[in-house]
Length: 112
Image (cartoon, rainbow, N blue to C red; front, top):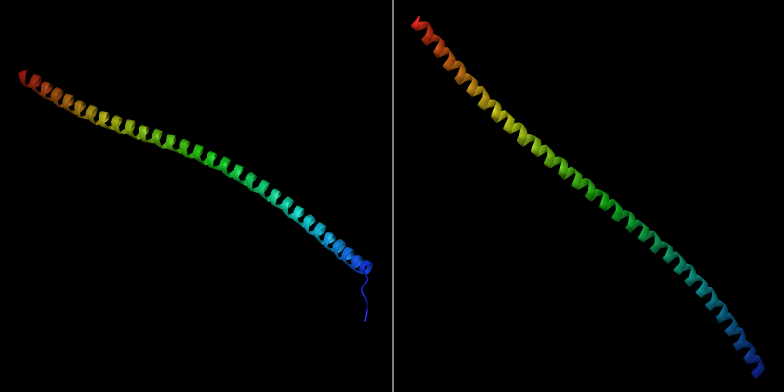
C-alpha cells in the first residue's frame, strides 16, 4: 500500500490546479474568440440594418416620385378631357353658325 505524504499530496493538488488553470485559460481564450465573432456579427448586422434603412429611404423616394408622376398624368388627363369638351362645344357652335349662315343665305336667295 502506498502511503501519501503531505508533500506528495501537495504536488498532486498543485498539478491539478495547474491543469485546471490551463483549462480555464483555454476556455477564456475560446470565450474571447466567441466574443470577437459575436462583435463582428453585430457589426455586420448593423451594416445590414443601415443598408436596409437606406434602401427603404430610396424606395420611399421612388414611391413619392411615382405618386407625383401619377398625379401629373391625372392632371394631363383632366386637361385633355377639358380640351375635348371645349372642342365639342366649339364644334357644336360652328355647326350652329353654319346652319344659321345657310339659313341666312337661303333667306337672301329667296329675297332676290
